[in-house]
Image 1 (tube, rainbow, N blue to C red):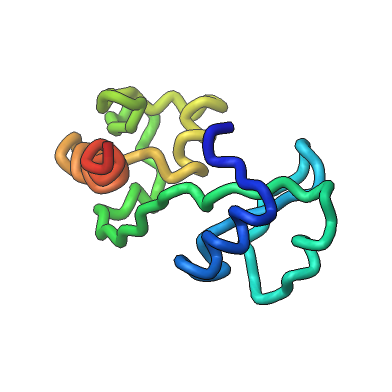
Image 2 (tube, helix red, strand yellow):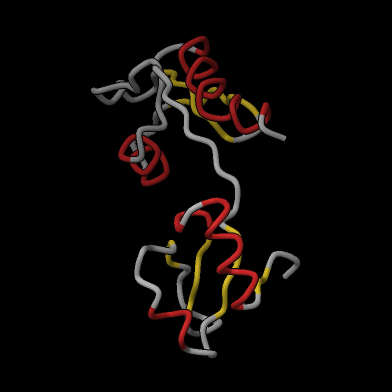
Length: 126
């Protein structure tokens, strides 16, 4: 990994950018933890360090998915990235899974607005 750091590099980076700018883990399979004011992990050579990956935070308002299931034979719209699909409600397991996941919209415009709100910021961050 190109952003792995040695202990001396970690200390310098934290001094410049703060404790929260680095992450560490004890084992390759373990989760990364955000650095903190606790310097104990620095005293153990088995910890692996990296610069915390860049992230984005965004808040969006999206149309609410359908709150009631359509009638059998009724039309609904869903997001199947990278497109919006129209489907007919058959009351089968696929329809029920989509509904339970909040992926059923009454109109194509609502589904498109939700898609744009969810995936638009990700495209813009590239």
